[in-house]
Image 1: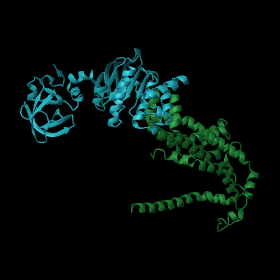
Image 2: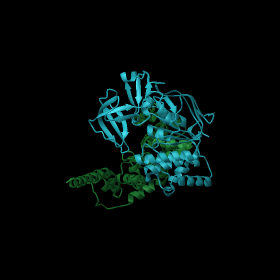
Image 3: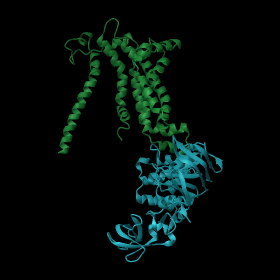
Image 4: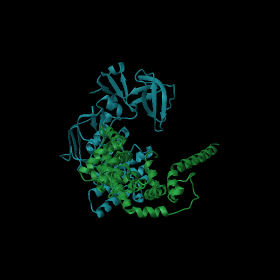
Amino acid sequence: MGQITLNQVTKTFGDVNVIPPLDLEINDGEFVVFVGPSGCGKSTLLRLIAGLEDVTSGMIQIDGSDATTVPPAKRGLAMVFQSYALYPHMSVRKNIAFPLKMAKMDQAEIDRRVNNAASVLNLADYIDRRPGQLSGGQRQRVAIGRAIVREPAAFLFDEPLSNLDAALRVGMRLEISELHKRLDTTMIYVTHDQVEAMTMADKIVVLHGGVIEQVGSPLELYQSPRNTFVAGFIGSPKMNFIEGAEAQKYGAHTIGIRPEHIEVSDSVGPWQGVVGVAEHLGSDTFFHIHDSGLADPLTVRADGEVGFSHGDRIYMTPREDRIHKFDAQGMRIG
Amino acid sequence: MARAVTTQRKTINTVAAWVIGLLIFFPILWTILTSFKTEAQAISDPPIFLFFDWTLENYSVVQERSDYMRFLWNSVILAGGSTLLGIIIAVPAAWSMAFVPSRRTKDILLWMLSTKMLPAVGVLYPIYLLFIQFGLLDTQLGLTLVLMLINLPIIVWMLYTYFKEIPGEILEASRMDGAGLREEILYVLTPMALPGIASTVLLNFILAWNEAFWTLNLTAAQAAPLTAFIASYSSPEGLFFAKLSAASTMAIAPILILGWFSQKQLVRGLTFGAVK
């Protein structure tokens, strides 16, 4: 079981209010991602759930019982840190066995679980090495192994992939997703990378300045962001925001249109501009367009083979059904 | 070109290091040499460096006149006991200052160090009176306590510096893994800080071994360590340099040998953190 409820939780450091009163419900077996720019309070929130920080006020419930003042060791949660936080003086085997040893499990059961975790995570060949002799990806696996052997109520991940190189990150992302499918245990995952959030989450919690901006599935956030912050944060490249006369046509203060919802042409379209930088990814090309009078630059996504180059005049047609409308406060209309 | 300059520099550095090293070592060397001279040769002018009649007479006289083993045993007890006691107190203190600092932690550290700036003689009288009150004069227990207390600031400072080098996330990980405070300090912090703790122990042992002010003032016969043993040869019937040197050599020999065997550990501990 791994049902976690936050009820009016706040956190202040000295005079700084990091988390204003916040409510959140995390269901058993869910993969929840906390995402937001740095300093948004996502790591603090995770540490509050872990018990590594004390809440200033409010209540945290784990599986229905009050865990607000329960020390981290007694909460039944496991955590994977950004720096892996392996014990450098212990072998891989001892690292993974440590939580079981702390739980005073008998040696036969410890061996069984450690060997099982090592084979699941492909660590069997390194089991007697020290963390210092492992690569970043292997260290990350050891950290995950140390977390899974305890069969915790929930896993907490604090930006676990940000120290890995890009290729490894994609691989580990899949491994963690698969682990979640197999274990079916609640996972809370903190990241600033919206791609990780979109690809892994059942439920995304977008945080900004300690406040939850929106909670929803990846597609909900993508399709109907509640405000301009979420609209701008989710999706890559960023949504284009257009203000002024063009927005007023739609009865809004601001309209938002994603780069992938604009069609380009060399001759027809209601919007036009001059191509600045063209980024060719092979499958797609991103054009950054200037002098459109709408947004500078305006980003559009086109097919990989579309051949505009620097200085070309380009015509654009937005998909009407994909235009997001926001009021002067940045809140969604309709 | 660059390589040639490096070699030249290296030679200069090596020579300079040897000169400084010999300069620092010379008084000890001179003491050892003097201990093998006769009293007359010891004070001869000009001084004789190596070509004198080597004799062991001073050592046998020193042995006859005083019980070296008893002083040695007291030194071992005082240095060992005060170090052990100090470590037991300093590890939790340094842990809390390094990992759960409060706004006043820096002040406390400085304040602790400031007690080392006080001239010891300034508090001799009150401590002497306290010792009389509690019947601690000339006891191993009393001296152990005093030596522990005077070195405690240094132990805490050193351990604090080593603990600061340990990433807090690793300790947090141990808490998440179910370790209580005791297990955290025992299984995670201590093994990781072992090089630092080892050099702290060594340095503190040496400091306590060499401490002369308190050991001379608060002991008479029962608890007197080797420092008192040396001092007993500097008076009252006049100075006997050769015998004094023999006593000194016997007193510093154990610590010299300890330092020799642990020099790698000492250097590593003292530069811990400076070199990554």
